[in-house]
Amino acid sequence: MSNLLDSLTTELRRGTLTLAVLSQLRTPQYGYSLVQLLKESGITIDQSTLYPLLRRLEKQELVSSSWDTSESRPRKYYVLSDYGLEIFLKLKEDWMSISKELYTILREDEENDVD
Amino acid sequence: MMLIDIYIQEVTRRLPEKMRSDIALELRSTIEDMLPGEYSEEDVKEVLNTLGNPAVLASGYKDQPMHLIGPRYFDVYVSLLKMILPIAAVISLITVISQNVFGYSGDEAILSIVLHIIGEGIWATIDVGIQVFFWLTLTFVIIERVDKNKDEQPITLNTGKWTADELKNIPYIPKKKAISKFEIFGGLMWTAIWATVYFNANQLVGVYHGTENGLKFVMPALNQEVLLQYLPIIVIIIGIEIAMSLYKLLKAQWTKRMAIFNAIHELIVTVVFIMIITNSKLMNQQFISYMSDLFSKENFNNWLIVSAICIFIISAAINVYDGFKRARVHK
Image 1 (cartoon, each protein chain N blue to C red):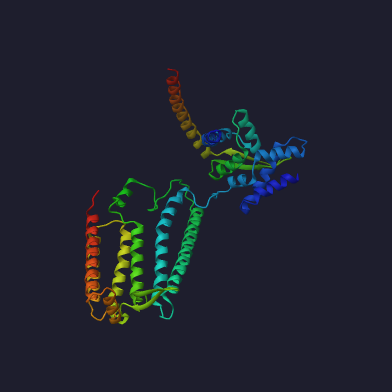
Image 2: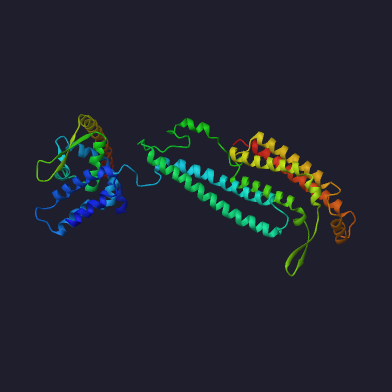
């Protein structure tokens, strides 16, 4: 059962990950700083998922990237493009309504349980 | 340091050349970000453990799927395989049988020919099966990788997105009306068997005596030369039967037209059969007297001919009736 639960949870989280990452990229971030930022908000992300995800977002032109070599360690920074911002705002709206609907439905369920 | 290098190598070697340097650089800076200022090998191992299996990480970077044939093409692939495999197998089997039958020189023993056909038939079927499977799979693996359409919708045999209109193209086949693959295969097999018997009647049909070395063929019942006079019409009938089987395979259900064709076919076969069997020169004179002695009955051959004709006509009539009955089924 716990295996099934795990895979269902992973599936549930997978879709929200893109949204979470996009939300943090309004200011430029590099890989590790993004991990830290998400962790502060309580979102743990599998790192082997995150780095490929960033590449994919770049390929889809939602984010743009640039290498910063001014510091001792070169870092690749990612930031939302204009197009990415537009998509992010729409996606956010969608998510808000989805979570509201889901909240309502789960809430009803809970009340029924109490009765 | 060594472990990090090896890890990065393990990831990048799985990636296309042009992505490698950039990803290697980013990966190294990320790993170093994750490590404390002064680190031990244990720290490195811990960091690499969080990054996980290099193969999984690399597959995340790649656009190419980690499967041969994905959900988008799997349905079409299986449908095509199921359709092509039996056809290819039957065709190869028929080829083997006809090659052996028509190429028969008359020198070899029939039993060894039969064994040869069985052996070669099994081999040819396996061979063609593997060939079909391989080439079809290869084709789909290539399509899977070439198609850049990111649509996850599975495509159907009509190679488009499914709509309810597609249902109109699929005939609804009631169970009684349906023609099974087994029926078609059985029909082809029957054609092959009687054709083999026809061409080798003087070595197959006749009187056998049980001896210590098994059955021994002592005398043929029929004159092969007389039989072979009917060769053109027999070849035409073989052609008709193969065509009928392919037609059945295509339609997959009985139709009125098919029942009519079936009736015509049965009529031709019955007429030809009666023509051949009533030919007074057909039966070996030696065989006739042998049989008459055996059953101590005069004109035994006449009795044999009449009953054979009766059986033939009855079975043909049943077959024709069955065809029309199944064509009429509506639900």
